[in-house]
Length: 432
Image 1 (tube, one colour):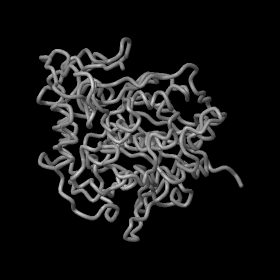
Image 2 (image 1 turned 180 degrees about the vertical axis):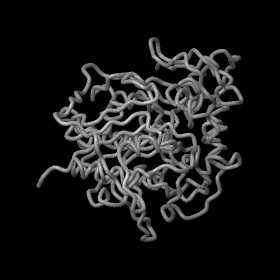
Image 3 (image 1 turned 60 degrees about the vertical axis):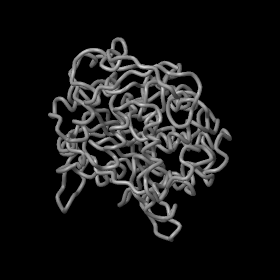
Image 4 (image 1 turned 45 degrees about the horizontal axis):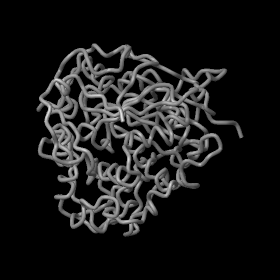
């Protein structure tokens, strides 16, 4: 499997690891490069694939991203070069790209309302620092906008949109028989977690963010669990993420409380990795990226060199390829007439869930459920900090991809995307 090491990591001292990469895998001893303490130095040059137009730009560090201290300019150049922050594995594309023709009529005017005030498409682009916007209706491009020097060749970070990709790979693994049932125990696939707070939780619980393990997701708090997981990633020591997850205390019975946790999605990634017995990037390429016809290579952060992909973050891909992934979900996980996901998986994954206490939650299987008209339409979306979204409205056959270049992990001063999504879907509504 091809692994791209960042220039900074590759220049560091090489060490031999005494164990296999990731969650319980053994096998050949990988070569591990020592990670810089800053999680990627501010630097220029290196990293990108040959010919990548942004490869020589300066970048910040991953700690700066989560602290919310990047300048607006450095945020842009960092977000389109995240493959230089950590080792990555390539997600190989296919042959002929999945066609995304331009619609006969472009969508250039959208009005949405927030707190009784009307706003325009330009307002959304400006306030949310949108660096890329793709709107598809019936698989055709009605709006494709690039800002801040981005182009069709730019790769942009997914942040937590990657969580929705990971849950989709669980669906593919169920279809392939690698995972017998989402009601299976987590420890069946990640035995490293036996005796932990995850012992007794199911795969479904994890996809609902309802394992019951205690977790603090505060991005800007250096003492939070989320930042401890980030530090484990910066350390690039095989198995360190699962070491952290195995030590979490239990806060509630499995399936009873929804608590947003990026650690939960690292567990989800380990489930896929161990179930399919190959890297997530390779499996994503085999099942979707190559078969659907993506136009460009993408990449995915690893927890250690040649290790396990970061299940909750770290995918970097082009705007149109994110749109193609949205079309794959829109089309119920079918490629060329073949069911890649189990029949009914998309409807199940993208619908609000009910905890075993009877409490409803506006969350699916690592997909968010919006409010407003989108909820009535049965729409759902993947969402990442700094303004990343993939919105899917199967009723209206609308896919929206948003790239944000925000600098505050809390989203202070930005528009929540729901009203904008509603307005776009309404503007593109198919006449009855």
